[in-house]
Length: 509
Image (cartoon, rainbow, N blue to C red; front, side, top):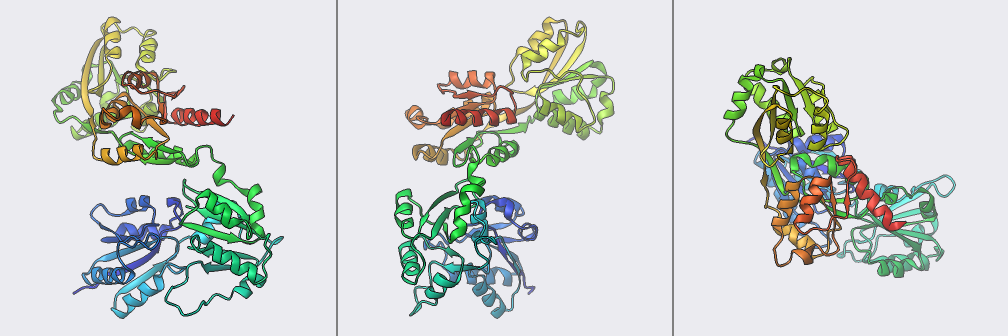
């Protein structure tokens, strides 16, 4: 039987962007992905949709599967002829037990490759603004385990050499043993005022750093509630943090923000909020999908020559219209005689992707602004095609009709409520793990409210802020009982992110 292959992949320290290109390639081609607690969930998005995803734990001694069990699992899968991506936090050969797994694969005659990863020992201090080497401070560096194998009869760590001969020390997995580590270093001659930093959840939007000295860091860390996973850095280079810190200066760092937008469209908002430091909790309350009955749209496409205008109110309208146009064997030349209008610059940009420039792009991104722009046009007797959502407001067709236009409103997509993650969402709200909720449309607000138990709704939202993309969405949210803390001045994703940033800036001013 054909044997498979195992890729022992370093998943990096937590920031999904630090995965190597080789690592991403190996994850994508794997039949099975075996991953640890410290491997960022976002990395699993690189896996093939048909891949088998197996979680094996490795969380602070609470292992879903023992190391021996993991070894057997990857060997077994490979002997079935499968390609296995063994995804490990950091680098597989730096305190990752990758060497042990490689030995098991070798003994079983299974082909394997090692794909190095960015180790947290380097990345976490870098994100905390601590260079591990600096010619004005030190040229020597050591990586040390803060949690030796408990079965060893004696320590293999030469504390005297570390305390006197190395400029920067980086300890892995050492939070529980921090009192022992600091006392050993001081007992072996390291100065009590030597700077120390603990970086928890390094490179992620949950990153938190505390500093002190060998003499004070135990009390400081205890008072701050620092727990694993964390990297310990000992040495004078820690002094540079106050000047070089960059990651933790981002305005939304550590804020837990719920994104309710449809998952297929949430990436832009998630990316922007992430860049500002937020930890995004994706709880889509809607899924956008084409209507099943396309007969009305088909009829409109077959009779495009009869229309003078086509108006797109969203990127979804553009997408589903052109998908059906192409399915019907036609292309953009069928619109050569028509004038176009859109709501919002993003919709205009999406239209340009099909080679069409909008004739009307109002300054404000709502239906009323499109109506105002049309007042400069002669609409009496014009036929207008309006492909849009089932839940859309009636303002546009009604006002264009009053101008004398014959408006053919065609429903081509709808927002379907999504409830799959409702239990986890409510759990996060109950546990005060949510700082702010974003609403990007009236339907996201309505469906979010439907996920909250009526008897608990007010209590669940106590202390949780709400940000809305525009006045129409704000009006809907308020009618549902939500207190809206900020509304975007520009009704776009960048505008919403700016409004959230400004909201928190006011808190600190």
